[in-house]
Length: 422
Image (spheres, rainbow, N blue to C red):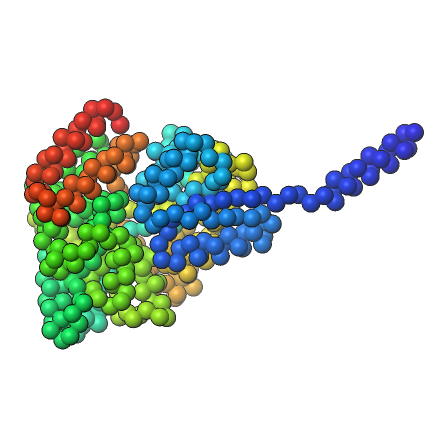
């Protein structure tokens, strides 16, 4: 009898061993620009081949404002259909309560990343998201056109505007009626907060809200910076720029119809693509400085990370996926395909990357001028702060009131928001 029971037990064990472990089905939500989603799919295909698990991409609009709004709805509803979220650098404090603490699971890999980026994703001692690439914008310029007209790469916004107007006028006289001087992100969304923060900071006007919580945006330097940008509309920038996000700006630029562009690193590899009319004709430089006391170059710090939802049905596999996408191998794969800036320090010394994407080592100069958005002092209220800021800026650019009046109104609104607690 005992022998028969032993045989049955062995048979049952063999059956269990022969039963394949069911593959996990995961979903990752991501909004991206350029060829970002395509490259993510290629990275996921490699993960699927290695692990046997399946990963579906839930695509989102490229607008970070729209993405964040949808994320909040899904997380508030306890949605278990999404396992992994691709998150902006500013979102960690606002979403932390509904995301998995990755501290323990990633302790073997975090040291490879820039410490400041890991710190930006740490809330109350918990690592909320693991970085996959970082971001800071630059000034893209048509080096062929600057050479043609004997112009220098501008160091200040005033120089940029004068050079843009001169080349734009001459190119139009030569027959290119579609040429503009400068394109940027002028739509009323998070991208405008980034652009306008750069104008204000570079002109010595502060950071909207300082690290200690002081509301600083209502000052003469900030007003001057916004009036400067307002003067570009219809002169060196198309009136339609007030509706541009990243891709609309790139569309004008990459068809060869702009002298200068403010944009993120992803536009570099696309501009040098085989089918690009401007391949080999452009380069990048740090964004221009403003004028007056405290003037400097300023580039808004960006970047994207991966977080695991607390409502995921497969959190362990989701964490494995996050570590895979954030790994040195996959960051290298991404940078070679997209020119996204890696967060793994060692990759800046990788000769293959330096050869294929010479922009990467040079982007360190841009990062020296990086300035954070005020998400740390405003915490969960950051999105309301940013919305009020970009609204005031957009009104100014559109000719609805002066910069001074709009910033004075903004200060009142921000003071009320601060009084309610952030």
